[in-house]
Image (cartoon, rainbow, N blue to C red; front, side):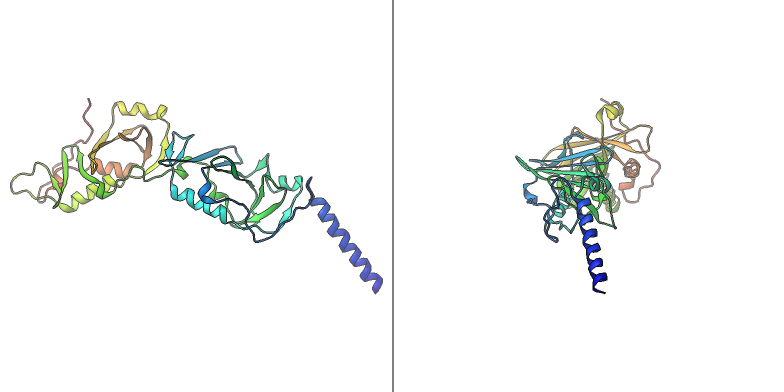
Length: 316
């Protein structure tokens, strides 16, 4: 019996040794303390974030005095909340036990420099704060990962879906929206609204005519609430604005007049160009078409709506 136990223990030791040898990389087995931070950086120190996916698509977001931007996508504004959420999550991720350390294992788990699902680099003002690879997913919301300065392959709580490389996933979709408190005037075709202490007033009301507050509020809400879907290449869409199909002008509390013009190609969306930005945005058709349908008659109580007028901007 003792000989059998001794033989079994010897076999176990051989198996453990074999596993260690197979998983040893050039640096050997590395020390690792589970449940400690995977990365070591302060979220406030991050100045840029770069993500490259397995197909070679890369997104770069960079901090600017005006906020976060995508320098390689026409410097379009980025959702600061999205950047903050991801950076803070990465800073707080805990690491588990080492899964493997060999070069072959890195390729197998797709955390190799030449074979990965995602490669993430965080830069500070003058140095790299974090550089790591994300690979296969053993379970839901878990991935294998490896820091660029380490051979250790571990499992962390992260998903590749959180590492988007498409510009529209990072875009600040509220870039064209207006706070109601900042809007003091609105012109849409022959509709001219002005905000007073008593509320919105429609210019040119005749004696006895009364403004339809519900319709006015709906118009203002629609004009203020435009959400953009993507940033577009000026070379492909700027020509649409030689003959814009629709437009309106806003007057801001600070005295600025900001014009919103819309172009329409063969696609089922509109292209927005606001006069305060040198950018072109894709917007959904429905809110634009609802604005186009608004007429002065609808804003006056008791007026019979006889038809719709064109709200296309005047050509200069």
